[in-house]
Length: 292
Image 1: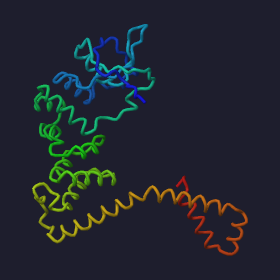
Image 2: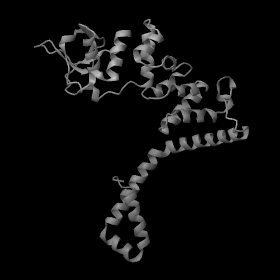
Image 3: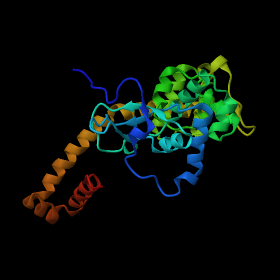
Image 4: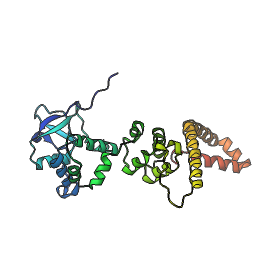
């Protein structure tokens, strides 16, 4: 079995006049801060992410723009005559803007690293992106000290650089555990990351150093929090392992009970002799229905 590529492997230079937008830009776009940031970024450091276009129309020699409308406008304003494009290998009628995810924190990190590897200074990046230099430095060093397994779990997520500050104080196995817990709780937040760091056993911290604690937190309270967090993690793993089987059993049981109360003879019997049982069965069916 072979997997077909959606785009040609390497970008190709296309005359900018041969790239046709697939929709009109929103009114007032050229005056927005986002548009000016894109223009400044391309002027200062160049185009990092190529445009996505359809395969060439053999009759006209033109490509339809699938993703990158703002970048195209900015390139035209800056006087570019050619633009690097990723060319789709099939004819898609939808706009890729509706089908792709915006840059995750990890992707943004790699793009900034690539710009710096090309000789762009953090100061120029700060100016181009209109963000504070300290934020640029944090994003560039985002993954320093974070193990590849944890990075892979976070690759499609948006999160604060402060989260990896907490992670890099933990050893790799604990980093993976912490990220899995945050994802499972759907709470990839600085507060949760710091709580996990506080609840991490000393031997699972880098160099055995315990993070700074508030003055109001005693050694006994930290130890108790560690024990409680360890217990919660064990419970979570047990629930996760049996969740699929439990849900299957629940669906089967609900189906059996639903058929039971749908039987008119059984319904009349329960209604006459065991009203409370019937009420409980009906409540079970309603509570576990697919609509609920």
